[in-house]
Length: 99
Image (tube, rainbow, N blue to C red):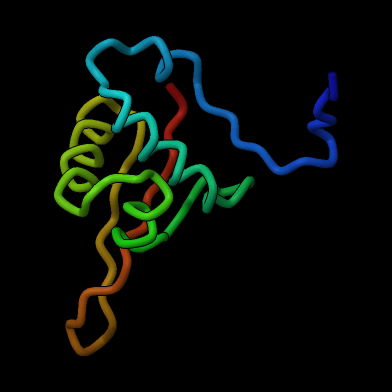
């Protein structure tokens, strides 16, 4: 048996409340973990594209949008829209919230 040394292996930490939240689907939890992959350790902000989240979580784009809405409604994340000066939509900021 090989023991994983988490000091040298990249990993994500998710709140226990998220794992135990029966209102969230397994897909919602995978989307949250995908956001964790890109979150800054200090600011807890991430800005992956929906396509990237879909790829990492194994979900379709529409499923990602549904999961992001449920995560936001549940108080796990906050979304912040971004655009350039010309009004073009950029990737959103997603903030992981303390729960």
